[in-house]
Image 1 (cartoon, rainbow over the protein chains, first blue to last red):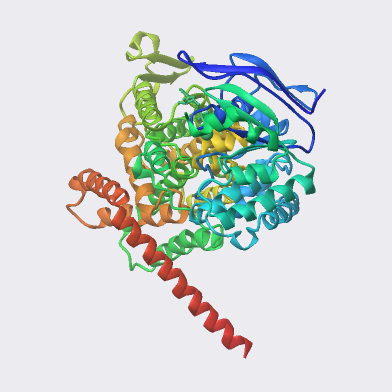
Image 2 (cartoon, chains in turn brown, blue):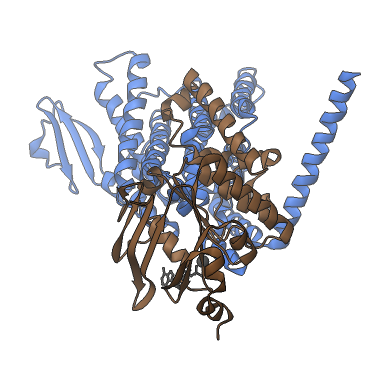
Length: 252
Length: 375
Ligand SMILES: Nc1ncnc2c1ncn2[C@@H]1O[C@H](COP(=O)(O)OP(=O)(O)O)[C@@H](O)[C@H]1O
Ligand SMILES: [Mg+2]
């Protein structure tokens, strides 16, 4: 059994088949791309995998465990973390606190311990700060730790979303257009970081992206969606040469 | 880009623009009311301030507790509540009745009053929890309307309760006064008479106890905000969907906030009942709106701001004669102006600019000072 097994999941919104029979096999540590024109259903796949939408049909297994139909919170606790195409940070909170929310379920003390400032509060907070800084340093955000998340420039906001997702200690990381709005330099840096995250944490990553240089540069495999349907999937270099894929992208 | 802007607008009730509070300076926030009340008490004792002013201090305490606890719901959790007076009402009646029924048997106020406070707070918290469950899924304007209705329902229920005690025990009636033939006229004492005031509650709410409760409220809420639970609560406020996909249990934290916020409002109610006369009309929506005005003017999400705004907005009109009758009108105008200003992009840009310049200036001062020390 593969690490990630998605079997024919689908959902429709009032007659519109946003995603139909989506199928995916992914091995542990693999960096997998999900591409397709706007409105193809890529983000909807992420919403199905994270419980934002319940699939009309199909199943989803991660590391041998059935994930189908679970709630967003449960799925995160079971090891699925994501970023958002339209950035969703905790804007009125600091960069550090954004990541510490990701650590919420791994570093625990009761609300009462917090209110009474018991020793466990201090030790746990210190450990959380260390862990959060580790992640912020990986994504080169350490210097911004005390900035409000909403005051960060666009590219750093996207990286902070990755740091926060990684803080939840996931087995499977879903990145929705992480390079959107970045300039070529920022994109190149981001590629390094994603590769580092994969290598350093042996992370399994599914990544939606429009930037073909990024996809060709770091994804071992890709799946192509078009009008909710799987067009083709396989080794990145082969898929990107496929005439059908080129046609879908050029929109003939 | 435009998509993002729209979603922020939709989240909208722009009145509730969050003012993120710094976790530093907590001690100052606690000390402000302590010093203020100590100085006031001193000035009253020295005869500098009139006794009319002395009479405002305990009410100021329970209004501060109300504002701080409402800010916990509105500013920290980010949900608009227009029924905070309902919880105060519950606390006032539970605490007040407890004292009325036990002041003959428990003669020491030092024992009786803390029990009344805890009881009033806990029953209000229970009400906060119970009202919290069905309205978990409501947000924004819908939640505001339901909480408004909640406050009015509580007041109307209390307004219809009749309670008497004679040698046979307690007699209870709803909607209609208790028929006289049910009561023993020689020993009967009316306790609750519908819309009429509760009489004879021992005035146990001293300034000392009230200030202690203010301090406890501030410390509990500030420590809560600056802890694991507080972060989770604020993450729900900032982005519910992101909070869920980061593993935050929304239900749990919303219920914690509704209960804790109601708990402190209940305590404020107990203080109220043991200081001034309690009758249901005092806990109408005007009270809820009044507290909301304190919160909005002090800064939504800013606990210290709530304390200062409450002190100024409560004391000023009491001191300025003739203002009383226009009070609610002026508050309404202030709310509308705040709403318009918060929506005005030029005003926001100006405000951001000014705060940035101020912090830069303060940092500059600090650097100069520490530089000198190093020399
Ligand atoms: N909640 C929803 N209700 C109705 N239609 C939706 C919903 N979510 C997505 N869709 C539709 O599904 C299709 C795929 O959207 P999406 O997954 O966001 O595409 P993309 O590949 O650009 O990420 C679009 O036509 C979109 O309008
Ligand atoms: Mg998308």
